[in-house]
Image 1 (cartoon, rainbow, N blue to C red):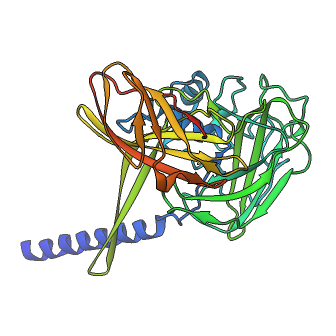
Image 2 (image 1 turned 180 degrees about the vertical axis):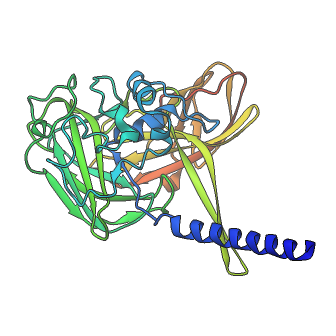
Image 3 (image 1 turned 120 degrees about the vertical axis):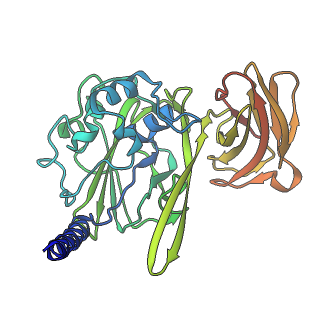
Amino acid sequence: MKARRWVALAAAGVAGVLVSVLVNVVSTPAASAHGAMMKPGSRTFLCWKDGLSPQGDIRPQNPACSAAVTAGGTNSLYNWFGVLRSDGGGRTKGFIPDGKLCSGGNPTFSGFDIARNDYPVTHLTAGANIRWSYNMWAAHPGTFHLYVTKDSWSPTRALSWDDLESTPFHSVTNPPASGSVGTVDGQYYWNANLPSGKSGRHIIYSVWTRSDSQETFYNCSDVTFDGGNGQETGVGGGGGSSTTTTTTTTTTGTTTSTTSTTPTTTSSNPGTTGCTANYRITSSWSGGFQGEVEVVNTGSSTFSGWTARWNLASGQTLNSVWNGVRSGSGSEVAVSNVDWNRTVAPSGSAKFGFTGSYTGSNPLPTVTCTSP
């Protein structure tokens, strides 16, 4: 009797395991695309940069970013590339309600629909030709449509469809891509002119429609047309990005992916027109860190020499520099090109690395760039 009961229980247990396996297989979601406008940065992307700390957690510094997270939760920033509707099918007006455009009607991102004039902003020049970039956390074919707000729009009210110009000022299908999927460096890119005749605060609204599914992404990028060249303001001391590495191991037919993220920080502020310097921490440890600065030529003429400058905070020391020549004294740091990276073509860049040490906090500097 006991033996028969044990066999019955064992059979029931096996059946339970099989049911559990079947449920897990059936409920596994299909892979979906993810991405967000990076240049000019969307609200979720720049607020993520604003809040990402060297430790990897997110603590918004910008008051508008903080308010958005308070309203919708921090998941909106950990998933900054997910402002989408899986049933969008490229639909816009009449599908996404007025006042919900920045969230795409997705409740996770509802905080970014709040009307404020202090979100991080990108400074641009009306009519200028710029390089756009859109993150491809997952890569899929599709079309990007770019809209801009009418001159009558005000940042003190939530965005409605009637606030946007009726037709896109630019559209692009299947633009080229660079970098790896699942990382911040992975992105679609293209060159296009900004709308002309604009001044002051506006929103550039992007709609990415996949051609292989109904998934559609909706992004608000806060900009100001003031003669700027892509510099960002309103990104606080925690601003940054991250480098993500995925390692795949195959064992007896089973593939396991492990993803690790190295916190980095980014701060940019142009000095002379066309020269932007991006500073980031690539790794850190107790009392020390390693970083790099990327000098980017966003102008139309080739650089023949460049210099990046910043000031060390109290307790910070720069220990070594490579691929650049350091000058300056005291807390002032100036790093210039070496012979082989002196020339930087338009849309090109040059990088140099460094190590440093610190006591107390390790805040981001504001980096300026000049050429020559």
